[in-house]
Image (cartoon, rainbow, N blue to C red; front, side):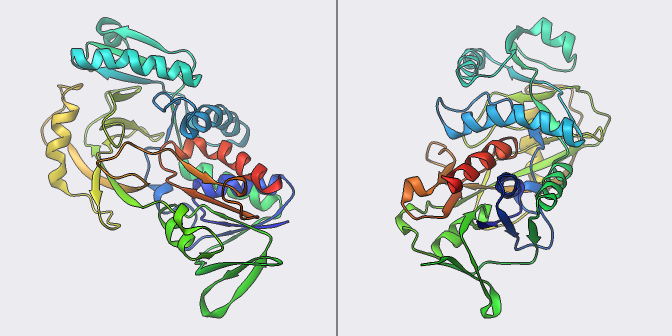
Length: 362
């Protein structure tokens, strides 16, 4: 079977790897000039444990399952990563109560080795943190996301797959022989199956897919998150997260493998793609960060980078789950549509890949 995967972000590459390993011929079409340059290049590079997600959601299932797979994959393929651990901190009494709720949900999700610790225990681990209590998640870590995507690409190519860069798909049409794929300048190819993992472009491609029920295409909302780097030496060894906020996980401490410390992301609902970081947003960052790190110096935050989450629920709605729309759901053979694959998409990529490959083979 010849399979076209649209989108060479981390999820598309994870799917293509699994499909290629299953013995199928794989082409990955990427509109940009390199792999993983949009959403996948603009994340926190965190390997999430799977703490927050609702019971029986795809986020919970794929994050916890894939996190275990991902650590093993990184070790086997030499992908730089580190299991740093994470503290979710409560800075007032209402947040302390929320820690208990997060712990219970995380345990339902199958997360391991969790504990709620008091302020004194936190101080021993991270002397600069202020909190009343914290939940410790030792299974959380960080990863070189580009190194990971290069490893996935290498494995795809080792199994005979191909990455086609600068290749934008204009239209998909279901025909008797499979799927007719239309590129620019009137060029077409035929494939047996298509996976739409186009991220921010998934809805546009779905609307250009003849035979796919259009009422199944969710709305797209842009959730922009900005990051600020810290001008001084890092003061934390672990990731430090506040209790979650609507639309995201709050402005947290982001560590990278090079030793830098950054903060982000916030949540800004925008109408179009724009990756500029507004320096004025630092004012709100200082206020949020100083709730758990009172020692943050003035003028220490420097605009760094921003990313756009492909959200499928609006600012006023509860956060929706991932959508992985397979032939068993929509009835169209040889077609899988993915929508709203944001955090924890990177962590979930290997598990999502295996499931999508299974949908195409069944």
